[in-house]
Length: 142
Image (tube, rainbow, N blue to C red):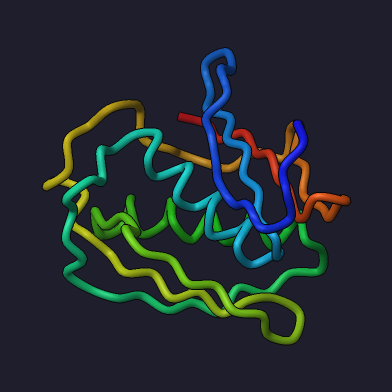
């Protein structure tokens, strides 16, 4: 799939008994933002959702793949612990990772469109830079 460097987006891909999300962006950080949106939109209809709070997290990792997993695990944690889902995501680079600002909505106020994520897997994990920008693919247990 060819994507121009300025394009960003995400999509869900059929996967047996799990969720697979592909995301892309011109920068590593935008690719991460798109991955978060892709996972959240796979199980809730976020159109019209209103942010009611804000969470910030320093997500540190030894590799880009570990960074992707750690950021998505942060999303799963807030969903499980507080019933919150990000409706806005801003990711900025920091030494050995990223600083994420998540604008959170009450997940219970959003229409359910799929199974909620339970864990992020390492199976088939991809994250890297190519000629058309950054791309990632991740499988999530639901």
